[in-house]
Image (tube, rainbow, N blue to C red):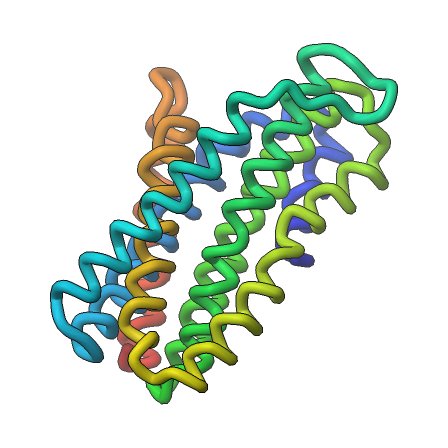
Length: 233
């Protein structure tokens, strides 16, 4: 949650110019989340369960994220008395990221419920790094709409509020029902990969900023591969 708030800090000093950093930060998020999903979630899921259960979990995770994003995208949201396109965009970004953070929490809880050494730290580092550009994504439209710095910071933090809830729920369920482990791994992986494909990639790889996004993706993926090797994931 605090990592998400950290992503709002550059906006305090750069204002809307912080948008220039987003392709690089989003690229880092793409690289870290993709490697974490495949190495830290899909591979253990296949080792713990059969291919059908893993495929079912992946499909459920993708459907969860697509459905929640579609539901929020159709709503006309307002914040108090504030009106305008900037306010609506701020509220929409906040709502989408709020829903997206739940499967990330499920990934954390599932990793902690597993007996695989180093997996929990590996997953939580990946999600923590991914949360930083999410905080920037929240703060930039709020800066344009005229929100105060304090509001930008706490809005960014609150987008990750479902993560500890999802982490505790996943941990308790997997602890009680061991057969849920591969499905839970796959569900979290499906949601995270869908987030990368549907949200992060289109935002990062624009026509003018694909070089920064490519550099960030390469750096993020390389860092997570190095961590996977170090932790023997």
